[in-house]
Amino acid sequence: MGDGSVVPRLGNMKALLGIVAGAGASYGLYKLISGQVFKKPKKNPHNESPSVKSSQQGGIKLRPGSLLAKVSGLDVVCARPDDATSSPNKLELHHLKMLLSRLQTIDDVSNRAQFLLTLGNAAAFTNQIRELEGIPVIAGFLSDPAPEVRVQALNALNNLCMNIQNQEQIKLYVPQVLELIEMSAVNSDLQLGALRLLTNLSVTDKHQHLLKGSVTLLLSLLVVSSEALQVQTLKVLVNLSSNPDMMDDIVQAQAPASVLLLFDERTSPAVLLRLLTFVGNLKAWRPSAQVADELRLKQDCLFRVMLDESSQLHGKLVRLLSHPAGEIQAQ
Image 1 (cartoon, helix red, strand yellow):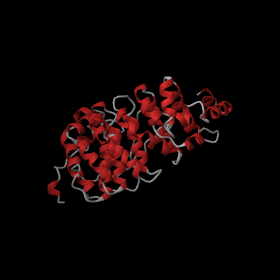
Image 2 (image 1 turned 180 degrees about the horizontal axis):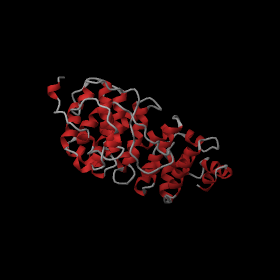
Image 3 (image 1 turned 60 degrees about the vertical axis):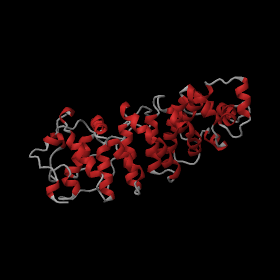
Image 4 (image 1 turned 135 degrees about the horizontal axis):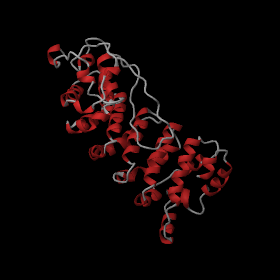
């Protein structure tokens, strides 16, 4: 692609970087220009509140004169990131429009991933991305043949999901996100990215009904995944179980009996605490005698595995009263 297709160069980096606010899009846009990578603080794994996921990954390097170097119309330069101002209101839509347009024409896998990373980090400009119809563009890469591109698409949608208006568009892709969880390798970045997106989408009860059919999938994932994936899966389950309107679907879902093995002192405290929170939400539900009898007829349903009087969970909960962590004893 020749220089003639690139927007005119700006004489001052502040013209582009000065419109970027904080530690979101400034990193992404600056990396496209300068190729420098900035490390961001790690998120506290115990934080249950919605959060913006930094999808920055190593290994993506820029070459002077490459497409990524030219995407903003500027040469690769060594400007300081602290030259940027903190006013997000000066952003011109054509900057984001250019990124979205170029994204759809890139053949190189690493370049597609880098463009999605940049858009994902542009959390300060979430409204503009939606107005430019960027959400369907980004979601289109959920079916990209390259796993790393699909991961970056999930991360970008996760960050955009922090905006309530964006959720109205992102919810349309829930079936595709669930399919990624089911079809991807266990403990893969794809599963983790998909679960992060579902966590943010299920924080309020507005879109939780879209996950009614996913409870069995989530429970099955608990018994085969790593700690990081178990924690993220439980965040979704805790969100769903906090909604009384979801309880009928949750208790009827099939549950692997092996999930009870997690109620053990040897289980990671981060997992066990959230697992107990999930069970606490379940036990707050009080079925009528008729409903309970009907549920007992459903083999392997969650009610029989975890809530029925014959469940082995009750004895396991008693033993956890002697857990060395006071927080787990209390829960």
